[in-house]
Image (cartoon, rainbow, N blue to C red; front, side, top):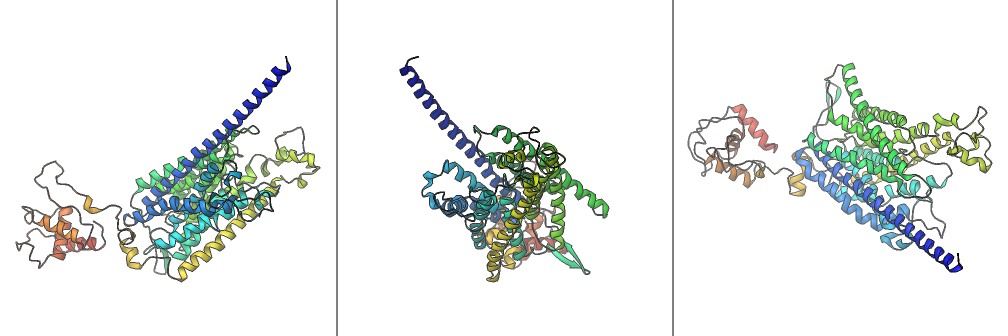
Length: 573
């Protein structure tokens, strides 16, 4: 082969390598964008879950918070959040505490795959912020929401802890001892969970949630308005968690590791962990009810939260667990959920979504149990060493402990990958995340509470936030009703559109129109819409000249009228 031909082959090989590198980069960017899109779709899941778990009078309030978690969060994470989290400066002494580069995407060309990584990390930041909204639902001032959401997403809360554990220079990462924060069991969920607890404590319980009867403290059930809506949100979250955990491999094409296998293992373990958490949570809920002689229910909401807690626990090390370990950790997370939720109620902390129990409880299980049950964890240490705790070089070259032999570590206690050191390092990380997030949130929520900016007025909380704060009811009753009876006949047709605007002009006009229809006074009360209209009439039109003075032959009993009027006052039509 001539020199020219050899030179040509070298050129072609170089071009091929360049093409492979370009394709690899494109595939990895595509992977992050697709996985990030599914994680962003989790905002829809949180929105439906929270909307279904609150009362209908507060649906708009909870939904707009989830929308702004995305849009407000995107702006502030672009401006400063990503810089605090991943703004390493390799050319200088980088901070192990906080980043300091890439504000407003300046100099982002130095960061490989910047835009794809920014998007993927942004949706994680938005998740940490969204966790809090469920814990303080139905009673939070909207302005205070904007403040705490901004702090959590962009400033001194989530970006700082994510820098510790995921940045190349963060103090949790820089050590030779690895920590289990693969998909953010501590960095996302424990961070969001402790912020949710602090917020719930400072804002206090919803009106009517707790009471003392005969010297005994009691927790009252305040049901959400739609279990089907909540369950839809749960299924969206279950789907999103597969991308949340699986996407944390960060690259699908890597010449060094088998990322495809890691992705598949992460997804499978997430499913198994979530399933175990759900089954054990609903089971312990039923068993405790039997033991204490309480009503026995197969609770859908407990089933949902157990599944979420199990999946949260998988965020620590779903890429490093065998299936049995995933099942065990998920099961413990489900039991922890029930226990934490019960304890919070004992202390009269009102968390409508059990956000703290799900995210902090599940996160702690993942952080503390993964170093024990992970491959080459505490339970597997004997597989790496002999009876004298010396390394077995021939046993398994993939064992992290064996990788240190070349660095003169002759005993397992000298090994930086030693499982007990990993567990201790995870505990230190958990305590640091809890202390930092808790301290910042205590100052933030405490300041809002001190200046009376945290909670809405009592009458607004009782009547609902949607109309007063947003001018948009989630279910406008004026849009309900039709001009047909159930058989499809127009005989009973009325222009009655809705009574939801109790005491408002629209409600009165509708009732007045209904009263003007033929046969209104002769129709017997059926306890339905007509009955409510008659009760409303009795309250507002007794002496009105616009109302006919015909005898009201079919008015209900006084008790029925009173119930109708109470419904008007409570906007319950």
